[in-house]
Image 1 (tube, rainbow, N blue to C red):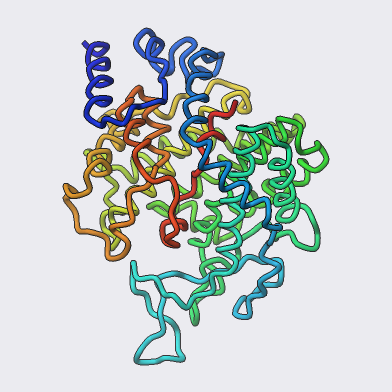
Image 2 (tube, rainbow, N blue to C red):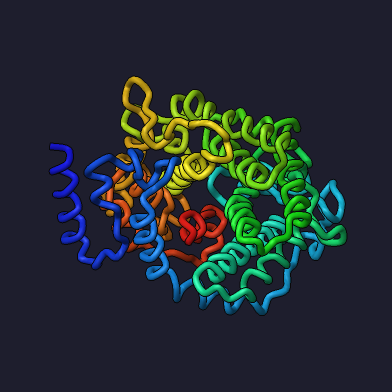
Length: 437
């Protein structure tokens, strides 16, 4: 019955959406074994190469023009790091990342005093130059890497490498590996745990660096310097009070901490010697354990929703954001199994005894991504009309869980946005990096 139901869903999704779905799922494997079975697309011991090749080709066909057109523009842009933008209000130095809390405003009753919080209302006068520089890196370096994977034109890979050297290697321009002064609040704090949110945009950068090294674009010595930066940043995330504040947050901030530690450990493990590989593998295992024992039980309601995100003034956007971060953790877990050096339980199919897990979370949000008019909660106070986007949760989860209707929905949604709020909260833009050729 389950196999028949899957076949029916395939047909209905294709007909109802009428989009000519080109992403060819390994249906035979899904029916015969499931996505995690022998030779399935998530099998760490050897996925069916024909099925994976079909998937890669379909993503290439979907994204080729978008990626190469953008990458051609990015070839003209020299790397520019935070050192190009001194921050007068920062308590740190030239190489220290600085940002200010979005939802903090001058107090009308005391204009020169400490700021006051207005949740969900972004202050347009905060210092954003470092954020924008970091987001530019997160847009351009992965796009250049994806364009190289598509075309084999080494100009793209070489320019992506220049960005990585500028940010993580070169002494004159590199960013210090911390966000101690991130999300500062005037009159209150020189930096806070929520500053960790700003570096979600390094997750896909780390993935690009990992691929460029694996394909011998980045030499070993240079990659060791890049990996050292991410290792130092991971140590800061796991030891500094601001990092620990993020780790222990009960909402999407805690999710983003796990996602980043996992992404950076995956990069370090991919090129480390035995001792470094063992440390990174330990960090990965810690992340998978935290996913199962903290994130899912602490954040997800019985219906698959995220109550702490629904309490915010932007419940729709925050729910999508947290779902994307959780899904990215699951995808990193699948990709990192060889690096971990041992079998890792599939996080996609992990469920608590009451059934809470990623399948339920996707099932909760998917109808409201399809048609937001049915959203049963209050609309977001800002930018409600700008969502949804081409959320990685739909692609990653649809393929991992054998739900092609999610992949079909993903294909209909916008891949890019010019709205700053959307760019700030949308951090996986290049699917080809997550299923490379």
